[in-house]
Image (cartoon, rainbow, N blue to C red):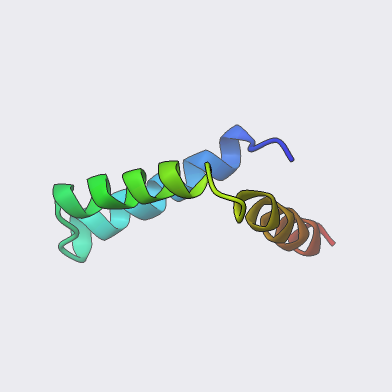
Length: 61
């Protein structure tokens, strides 16, 4: 699965919205980024990619 620019843009807008309107702190964002970075290096990464790809496929129909 290739992560497309629109998906990254939507997630970025979501993070901006949480930061701007719901009080998400910069250190919260940093923890989430580090969590995602290290999670991508685990054995769970292929399964997560499969689930995200399946969800994206469902939204296209």
